[in-house]
Length: 60
Image 1 (spheres, rainbow, N blue to C red):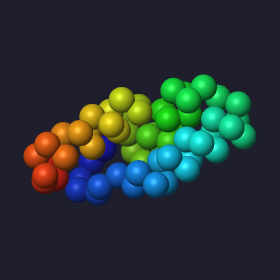
Image 2: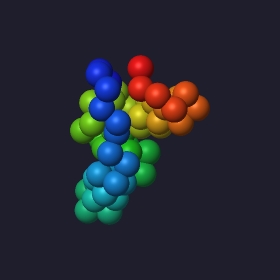
Image 3: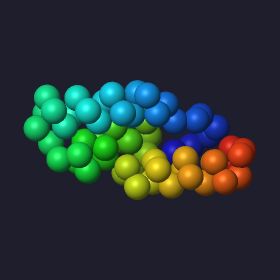
Image 4: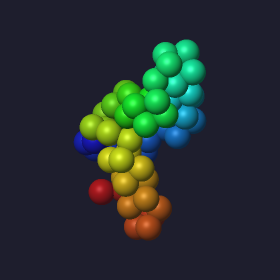
């Protein structure tokens, strides 16, 4: 993900839930799709970015 935009956790959770329940996807795949919608390659990268942000308390 580029730049200084903080991921939208609420949008991530909503998109993942819709993909999982309405789309019939596994939770893992649904989270990957939700992460990709915010510019991340995967859910793992999304959660890692958030964890790093929390630990550093800053962007970049």
